[in-house]
Every structure is written in C-alpha cells, then in structure tokens.
Image (cartoon, rainbow, N blue to C red; front, top):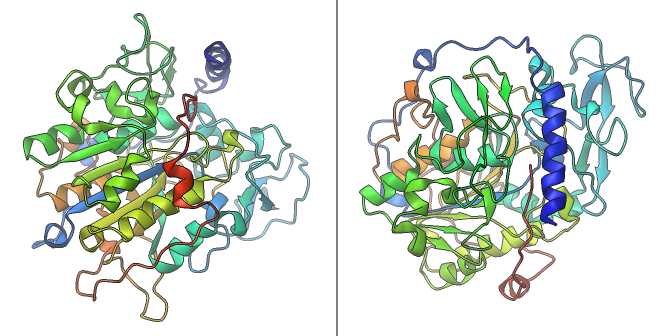
Length: 472
C-alpha cells in the first residue's frame, strides 16, 4: 500500500510540475498588511454562552456536491464550462455563466462508485480559472462532465436534516487553494506561511507527512507569485508558525484532537506536524485515538473546551472510500453531543477540508496569494444557532467565512488573543467570526436526534483503520 501511495505521489508531482507551475495570470492582492481586519463587536457574548466547541472535519466535497438545490442557498443545479469542449449534456448558456461558457446540468451520483478527482494546487487553479469557475471539466476519470455532480439527497439525509434544523453556511472557504495537507494545517493555525512570501502547499515527499516522516523528507511551497516549488520546502515538522494549541495551553484551556491513531495519522492529525505539540506534553494527553472516543466523552460529559474530530477513511465522505458511512458518523457525533450533558453550552461546526475537485459555482475572493480556496460545505449546530423562525428553524448564512473564522470563534469563546499579526500571515484577525450565525437572545433549543442509516453502535465497535484517509 505504501509503495502504491508513494508512486501516486510521484505521478501527481510530475503532473503538478507540468501544469501547476505555468505562469498564472491571476492578479495577486497587495501586501497582507493592507487587508481590512474584522473584529468582534464590543461586549461579544460568545464566552458567556459557549463553553465547548467541537469541530468535525470531513473530506473532499464542494458545497454544491452536497447541497445543490438547497432552498435559499447559493447552490444552482448547473455548472459552467467552455462551450468549445464538446462535453455531453450541455445546454445553451444562460445568464449564470461567463461569456463563451455553456451550462452543464449537475447530475446525481452515489457514494459507490464515485470518482476521485485531482485536488491539489494546480487543479484548483484550473478549476477556479481566475474566478470563472469553469475549469472543472479538465480533470477526472469519468468523462468531461464527471465533476459536475451532486450526491443524491437520500444518501446524505443527515446533513440536510442538520441544515434544516440549524445553520447552513454557504460562504465557507479554505484559507488556501489545494488539498488536505494545507487544509488541516490552516484549520488549527490560520496560516501555513514559512516566510512572508512562501507558504506550504500540496503535500510532503514522504508519508506520514509530519514530524515522523523519514529523514530527508521535503515539503512543497508556493511563493507570492503563485509559483509552485515541489518538494523544495523544509522537513514537515513546523515551528515557523504558532497553532491554536499554544494559545489554549497558555490560557489553561483544555483541548483534544480525536484521530484514528496517535502516531502516523498523517495530515489528518495536523498537530503531528507541529514541533510544539509532537515533542511537548500535549502529545500524550491531548491526541486521542481512536476517534470513536469522542462518542463516549460527549455522552459522559468529558468534552474538552475545544475538540477536533477527524474520521476513518470509511467514515470520511472521501470519494475514494466508496462508502456511505460518513453522514451517519457525523450524525452519531452530533447526537452524542446533543444528548449529552454539555449540549446547552456547545457549538458544533461540521465542515469539509477541501472541495475534492467537485464543481462549485462560487468564486472565492482572493485575500492573499494563498487564496481563499474553493468553497466547502459548513454546518453550525448549537442551542443558540440562529433560526429563520420558530416554524422554520433552519437558517442559511451568506456571510463570507474562512477556516480562521472558526479559530476566531474559539478565541472569542475562551477570551484568547489572536494568534499573530495579519502581516505575519495569520488570518484569525481578518476573518469574520462565525458568531453571527448565533442568536444568544433566543430560547436555547432542545436537541432532537438526527436520524441516520447506521446507528452509533456501528462506530463504537468499528475496527481500527490503518489506511490513510487521503493522499492528496
């Protein structure tokens, strides 16, 4: 298996050298110091009401791949592609596509089979196409229209149930273009800058992509002209930036990261790539395996103030897993929290680490040379999650969020200072907190269990998994 994974990485690397390093015409924004910084309102009430934040991280889905057609959301049921490509199922272009493009109706798919599209820096640049969002037809193994798809609602009913009861955010963007490695790093740090004009990108040269990689392992980086430097970066055991772990530890705030295994979980446990955590006291007390421990911790009132929850491959929603377990896994975690003693003071955030190559129509604003990246789904669940009305509890947030919006909310909940200056690459100052998806004046909601195909007992007794969730 490892030989196959490494071979695949070499092949991906060669493809990136051939495509991702070509000159990019995208205009880059000015220095990060020129960006406006969003700040919390005076008297922000988050810390009064929220004592537990649980971040559930799934894999490789764009917003439209899961929520195409969702009422009130920016989620049309067609995509855009150049009219000269001759792909099937094309219709005459409407007003929703750039000039010269045609509409491509999104087609329904399941989890098995499901194609696994490229989702590295180079392919994200192609899909984005300077904001035209029409390059998705160039990648995939199921024809030109393969990425123009949505998963049938019946297969992801728990996610739609959560959206209809709580908050669906239709403007959540990763910090950076590209795949899982940088997605997970920025979820816990708000940056992956090596210097002011170099940032981590794609993945390291050898598994497990962290402090425990073999000697000689090199990471990759992108410069501020969006040129990719493959396997030319430092060993992937980083101290070039702080993570939220330092802030939480400094304030005596408890935290846990639930992973499939403590050691060699790769970049789905990003603290293993943090020198501060990997070689400090946090490693033995805060990295929890297997991930199913979150179910019993939540039920028994043992949640930390901040928790991150990553899945096994089978439970991850990753297309390569060919599995429909993901929605039930997330429902099980949400139900364990909702039916546990900490529900009244908890906020749950469910999101996906990258778009996975699937079509999405929303052009991300470019706030620096790293991104923002291509939009992903985000659900916000809490007794205080904003409601449309008493008879229609679901609410669609159109506020532009980025991954550091979650970090900012964690900082608000625990009265923490930002990780660093925006000029240093940290994004938690500039990000808009997800706090506007909450209404602390409303009567706290009683929890109603989310139905799912597979029961919680399935995940409590799930055998250990040694297979990486993703290799890109």
